[in-house]
Image 1 (cartoon, chains in turn red, brown):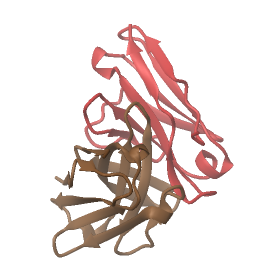
Image 2: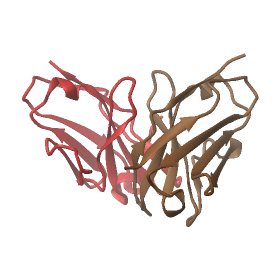
Image 3: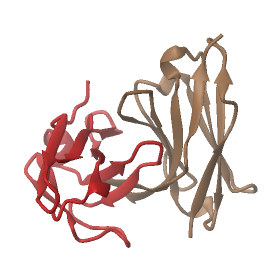
Length: 110
Length: 120
């Protein structure tokens, strides 16, 4: 059972926006920074967002992150078929001194 | 750019030790932190541990008692040993460069992953 909560699935039509929530606690997202990863089948996870909102080089600005209190959100605008993947939030949890991942959200492009 | 490659046996018997190595190119492991992460079939991502030559290594509490993580700076490799494995340890194992410090933490880039099956 993850200390982070994500919806199991989200879907939207091409070109639309999907927002994925990640709910934690004071000792996880509340006092630390969130990251987001994209996992395509058969490939290694890719870092999309770190430090709540920063994008690594090469990640398009269609992907954006935000944090409020003990929750973080990943927004994907201009949805493309290639965005169909599992998305994981992650953060350091100070209560257990461990890096924790959310259960993942499957994004489907309708 | 930094590249990571996992290596090790794809099949381990129950109760034995799973040993994996991550070879790093394009960067010195002495100057950064490095993590192991796994994904069991049909499950989510699970962080295992990180190792660094400059800060105290950290382990997932649920695996700590069975884990040993080490670094070989002469070979630019780091390794994972997981003792007393069971079929529940069957997973794709990834190594990754780890950034941040304190409450700031991220993994990038990742190796391609190695499927390890625990079965007799």
